[in-house]
Amino acid sequence: MSADRARPFPFAALEKLTRADVQAAARMTRAARRHVRLSAVGAAATEVTGADVQLAVRSVRVADVRRGTDDAVGVVIALTGDPSPAARVLVEAPSALAGAIVARALRQKPPKVVDASRAAPAALVGAFAAIVSAVLRRSHAGVAVRVVAAGPAAALARDLAAVAGGLTSAWLTVTMGGEAFEARVTIPDAIAATPYLAEAAHADLLRMGDARLVLPIVIARTLASRFDLAALAPGDAFVPSGCALATAEDRALHGNVALVAPAAELGVAAELAGGGRLVIGGLLESHPWAPEVCMPSDERSNATLEAVLDAPVVVRVELGSLTMTAREWADLGPGDVVTLGRKLGDLAILRVGGAELARGELVQVDGEVAVRIVERTGELAGGPGGQS
Image 1 (cartoon, helix red, strand yellow):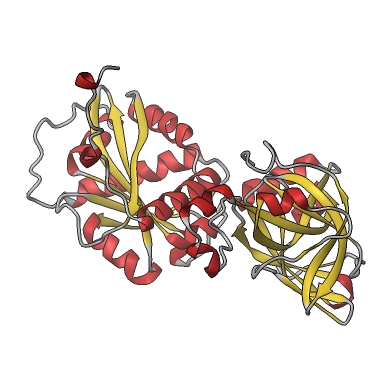
Image 2: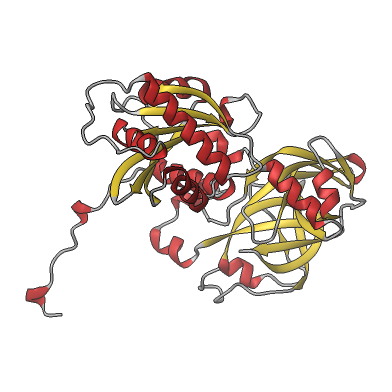
């Protein structure tokens, strides 16, 4: 391209996001993948309204309950029998969209003009809440859905923030019968760790019967440079930096661990107790492969060039795995105890990006859990300077 045709990139036109917004989008994405069947919601809405309904996520931001429209209709849905605010979702729609949905569900002609300066009438609010509930029940079969509250969306958002703390909102474009509307879904940040599809997952496991399922036991996760990992050889000791979950005492491991599938980023919290016992926890935890996790404070001060050339990757340290049939996993609950029979010195696995990198013995280095490499079983994808 010639110089006279070159134009500066319009950076000023780019959408401006804060780090909090990026983190909010990640939370919403995790929650949506685990809890929402978006295509099924659109199909159910199409069935209920008789019009082709398409849903598309436009943006995700940290919720600001101070900003809202007076005419927006809100419906708070409880997605399980759990009464805690963390299991609730606020669905908001402008009166025009709520009116169009109700009219089409009743097979009537949608109103052409809606007075946005006035609150939606109670009859419209109630009908819209009933339709939202019906759509969610059809699209999430087997999941209990209950309307907790309905009314002006701004007031409901403030009430939810007061009891649930931080909130994240996703703005949706709803296309129905050739017309486009804006809607918003707001969730408590804690919902990203609340698996409301537990009943459906339990049924799926029972259907798998005696199929054997394996989850590695992660005892530490940390950052390490590609060059350091590429240079690991038998006899070397790998010491996790600042992110060990379990500690070594009296020739045994104690403390928090997680059951995480090799390529997954969500795991079940657990605790290693004495005698090689594993106590199952009741929460899902995030164990991302993104390098931002477990970043030691001194790593943040590196010069840009050094940081790029020595880009860190996330390493998980696994001590064996827990293998049970699908039926046994289904029967497992918080507080249950599983005997592992593993001791300090058993072979551990170093895993990067879901792939096994090396195996070694668990040892103590200045009181910290470390792995003395016995064998290399893999290489970093792309070599020391490649992508993992």
